[in-house]
Image (cartoon, rainbow, N blue to C red; front, top):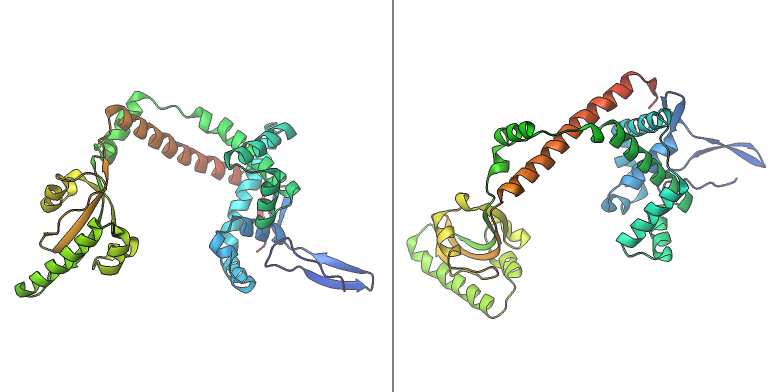
Length: 318
């Protein structure tokens, strides 16, 4: 019997022997969107192409199980894609071969890829060159129709911007602060045990001064949950910092580690990774404008998609 490999890595089509010379391929229709259909193989091919690298490394049986649990939600996404492409066609929006070629050339340039490395990348993702061009063409078409129908119509006035900043006070905060890491020892139950902890911290500080890796030492010795990430505490606003931390940092330069110091929680050695400068008024305004445009775009996009769905014929057959 003729064996046919599926376009997905995990899915095998059902074959029925019609004669010794032919087989019939059954590809179930999982949805109808106006005059177009979405097939089972199309759904699974799309799910696999969008899967995270970790998922792609799983066994076929494990991938099938995960895909099965996400069929319905991903089908909704594919329906929305079909509707946008159909709307673009109704509006006379298209993409030329030259535009597709230019996009591919830009991708190669951006990632410093040769023709050979680009081809190898497509193979790893499970695409033929023609399949990739088709998907890229669709993405460009959707980008065009979304820009025409939504993005180009968004206008943010100064009044809108001021109101948005008032309603989202975190944007107007200066943002001044520090990115720091720490090695931490919990406060002992007995005061007489503090000396032993201080000796341990002093020995670690000596290793740091001799060129020891802070992250590695944090993973080895720190008793804080941040130890798993090399002691990284992330960004801390200047006004949110405990006074003991603020005092230690005031004497430090980026890259330096502090002498051990106590707080009510325990003993700390901190490293100043970066000083985060305060945002200017222009920075705050630009950040707010970007956030407001993105918020408005998402709201209008969802409303537009809802409208496309309401006037469409959609039949789901999962």
